[in-house]
Amino acid sequence: MISKKMVDLVKGSSVIRAMFEEGQKLSRQYGAENVYDFSLGNPNVPAPQKIADSMVEILRNEDPLYVHGYMSNAGFPEVRKAVADSLNERFKTDYTFENIVMTVGAASGLNVIFKTLLDPGDEVITFAPFFGEYRNYVSNYDGKLVIISPNTADFQPKLDEFKEKITDKTKAVLINSPNNPTGVVYSAETYEKMSAILEEKQREFSHPIYLITDEPYRELVYGDIEVPYVPKYYKNTVVGYSFSKSLSLPGERIGYLVIPSCIEDAEDIISAASVATRILGYVNAPSLQQLAVARCLNEKSDISYYERNRNTLYEGLMKCGFTCQKPEGAFYLFMKSPIEDDREFCNTAKKYNILIVPGTTFGCSGYVRIAYCVAYETIVNSLLKFRLLAGEYGL
Image (tube, rainbow, N blue to C red; front, side, top):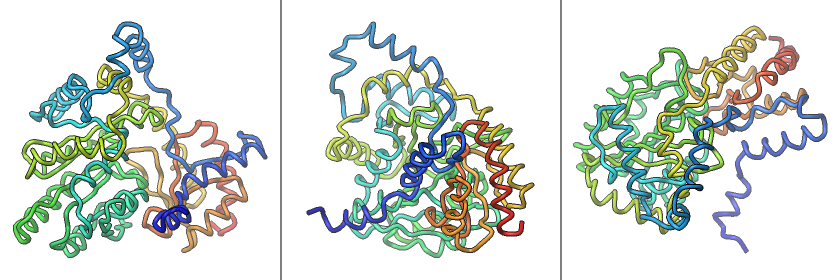
């Protein structure tokens, strides 16, 4: 018999994953070219060639006992140093290898830091819309996720409501920019105001409130958009990063945490994060992937591919009569549902073999998420179907 907690989790299993499975079924039934699956954020731009070249070189030239063996739970020291050096060069920081914990992707990084920080009943604040798995990552450690309602005008965080909802139980704030599902980049002004609020609340409650920034899409921004580096605005910031999107390596599960020395209780948090990595069962991040990404920290995926998809999809949907938030980063477009029930709208879209995810999944009803990290031909061919879908609602 499975645990009572898992019974509910199985019932509420990921809507996104379920739609992805449904897309596979429809592809077998109608042919992949006739199915428009925008459900899953699975990069379709190949990883830079240097990734494969680095893996081959490592396997050919390095000691296999070293490459495939255990190391510190926090990762290879030389890999952590390479990451720290790269961040120092880019953001004028002063990290050492001790500030870096290599993780099994961003998801494990968040679980590690929540295991490190949370006691039962502690509150973690996040801003809707947000990645739905945040609910589970917090509840894994008996924490409570406190959700700030969405600002549908521009999808910057609602800071007035944020200030009101910080309590003595608030242990952390979780943010994600560039944002999944909207593609919005939080502004420097937002971080300045957020930092001032957090500093005030830390003084009021006499304990640290940690700001955890989840940044798997940091490198995926368009035009002259800049992603502010959050630790510059607030001292008690922990950064979670993944190479899944920036280097198109989602299945390799490799990322890192940055735990700056300046944060309160830094020494204890750094030590505890390393222990959490082990006792959660990750033990350490994949060894070959650590060594490979350390050689590819300056590599990037071809973002021009995503940008063309973004522009074609956004312009096409607007011409159909839909209302959309134009993404500044990531590879998701957030579109307003023409009816209040976004789940019903997604079900109607399936009549045209269009698979999109209801905004309710992200804590923002009345919208849908469209992942445009697909073949360009899928974007182009789907627009006729979107036009027919729009026609059903008189757009």
